[in-house]
Image 1 (cartoon, rainbow, N blue to C red):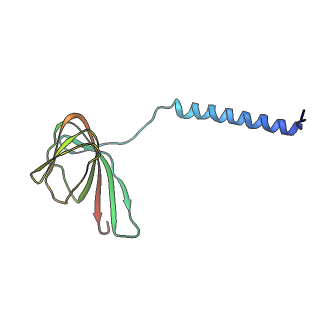
Image 2: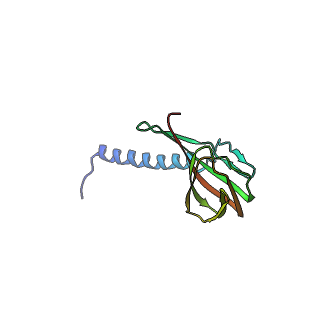
Image 3: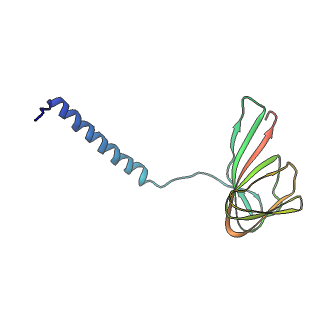
Length: 141
């Protein structure tokens, strides 16, 4: 039968205790604490709100992206401002967009572009729709 040296056994006991403590600490700190968000949504137009923009400024080109989530309940929006070109992706739900009087049904996963200055409204027949909007600002800002 192999003999263990006392310091080797102490090391194993210490490592076992450290792993157990780390697991308990992780459970205690992360699993039991409620998730807190301090996001304030902005009303973009009647019927649709937007999360605060996450701004990404490119250093290699005069380009900035503002990423935000647009959330709308059942119903129709008023005209949504389009200050620049916007790449949109329907993340949840189903909507009908009207862009410059052209109606198009959108399903989850659909991508489309709305050009700067376009007239944009959306209609949601369901409960909640979530749209990822990537605003594309060209030039130095």
